[in-house]
Length: 205
Image (cartoon, rainbow, N blue to C red):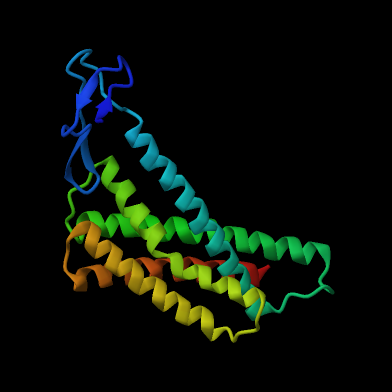
């Protein structure tokens, strides 16, 4: 049947694509031969919709991971006062925001300069989308709501996430596995560094 232009309804053709992909994340939207407008400008919107959904899922799962980690370290209970609970949930929120900001920013930085990947705005989105989706191993932490597991399970889960992030980064940048391991490990180390700073700051208070 083929595609039609969303502006004038002109048939694009059975075998003619409405976009050309030069490399992952680098696409060119084709124009209608009749009205000369972009045949389907909403293709990029579909990618951004997927991006925000995966970003939300990534942050939600990471928030649960941080909460589990804080519970195992500090032992939260019903006997805690209101001010203590507010302080601890504030720490979880700060850990989530600053930890992931440092992690993602550093990862994009080393991907741009250490992996020497060609970058445009869409390329940044591709890398972030790959990291969000490849962090799906965090979903297995949900079973800790049902069964009791030692805190070492969090560490094992982090190893799986790190390895999955490494593979995703290798695919999206086409760099060597050694460089991708170094980039992902460094980014996760930055995240741990931010967590350490928060622990020191909250311990002093």
